[in-house]
Length: 366
Image (cartoon, rainbow, N blue to C red; front, side):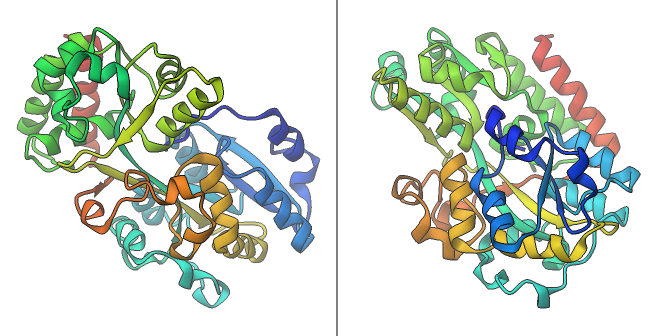
C-alpha cells in the first residue's frame, strides 16, 4: 500500500484506536485499514447516519495485515486489502463472497478499475475497489530543469534509468521507494520483460540495471521523500502518486515557491488498487456490508480522494472530486494511459525469494 501520511491525533482520539471497550459492541463495524487512509469524517458520518458505531484498528504493512487475517478470529469485519494479496486470502478461505443484492451502490464502480482488480479476484467476487494509484516520477520542476534543461524526459523512465540523466539529478538528490514489489517490476517492464516474470535470468538483468544507477540514488524510503521533496532536499523520486500529492500540498502550504509535479511514465508503470473485503468470520457481517455499500456512494468516497490525493474506483464520484485532482491526467489517467499500466501480481515463493535477494543487493550496492 501506498499511504505514507502520518496518523492524525484527532483520528486516534475519535476511534480510540481499535481494540478498546467499544470493540465488543454488538452492532459495530470493526474496520482494519492502513493508517490514515480514509477521510476522518467518512466513518464518523456513517455512525451518525446509521447509529452503528465504527471501531478502527490500523496497520502499516501488508505483511502484518495478511498474517493477522490468516490466523483467523481477528474480530474484524471489513478490511482494506491491496489487490495483490487477494489471491492468497481467497485461496486460504479467509474472505466472504460478497452478495451483490446487498450492494445497491455497486453500479457506481468503474469497469476499468474492476478489470484491474479481476486479475487477482476473478469475477470480482470478493473485493470492492476503494482507492487506487500508480507508481511514477515525482519531481521539483525548477530543480530538474536546472540540471537537465526544460526538455528533461520527466514523462519517461529514461529520467531515472539512463545513467547520464540520473547522474546529473544526483546533484540535487534522487530518492526511491523502499519497495521491491514496486521497483523491480518497473525495471523489468522498462527492459521489455514481464513485470511478473518467473525467470531468474530476467531478475539478473533488472539487478544489473538497478546496480548501474545505484550510486546516484540518495536513499530508499517510503515516507521521508514527502518532506524532502516539498522542502527541496531532493529533486526527483520514484514514488506513489498520493505521496507526491502530499509533497505538493506541503510545498504550497509552506509557500516556499517550489513547484512539485508527478508524471506517469509513457512506457507504462504499475497500478495498485486498495480494496474493501468482508471477512468470512466477521462478527458483524450485515453491518460490514452496509459500510462497504456506504463507501460506494459517490459523494462519500470522493471525500477520501480529496483528503488523500488518490483516485477512487467509483465512476460516479468525479463531480465530487476536487477539480485539481479530477482534471489531472497523472492522477486520473485517460484510457490510453490506463491500458499501459500493469497490476501488482503475487509471485510464487521461489520467485519472491529471488526478488528479495535482488533488492538486498541493490540497496547495499554490491
